[in-house]
Length: 198
Image (cartoon, rainbow, N blue to C red):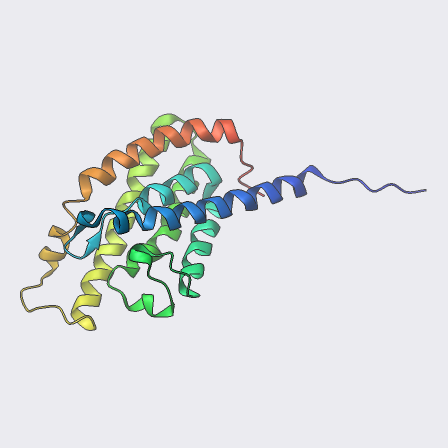
């Protein structure tokens, strides 16, 4: 007579999938804050909570699961669901000047997760958060500049310096939120005890 046992790993994997779905949903909510507060759009760039949640996904879920949750968010939007900023969605979003920020969230979550997987101190969490924000700005701003220059018909006065100048208004907010994400993520990981390697 044989018996079948259920391995704990499968339960943890199911829970991890729930967390991935949760962060994808949080990204959808954070992306559309500007739809309710229109003045948070500066120079055509929506000031959202997406960077905060992308960073937090890497801190709590780890590199693999964090990147998966951000990938799910991106593909749900590309499939047509209105989950991007201003309730945009569809494959055409790839041509939006701000799509680089969306694409960067996958790498942000992965890199942030890798950093805290190697060092679980509070200082490491805060550093990882700020580093993730930097990645978001670098990829997003360069994509935006290229988009405006190549296919989005930018005016002649639009330069690389102007592109970065547009990023100054949301910078203080993102720095503060990144630090808070580091502190909050450090505490929440200990509470949730997500199995990052599953």
